[in-house]
Image (cartoon, rainbow, N blue to C red):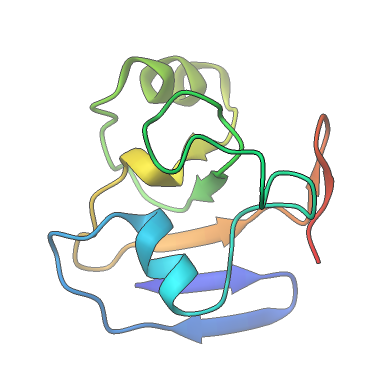
Length: 101
């Protein structure tokens, strides 16, 4: 998996059964802002604070992800399974939750 974080590019070796959220947290590249780092649903797909942008055509499985994909919003990293060639972009500014640090 490739992670784009502003101008930085990270290549991660991740097991396919993992979620993007878990892989990001393990690599110390959290998708959260300072506020949502503590106030989130812990990967249950309920809060929409772990949003990331995908640079491929990964089909959404979760209802929220399907809507987000349809309207161009960030996808939930907790609901995306790792796949070969996955490219993920971390949002540096989240409209509701503020900046990532």
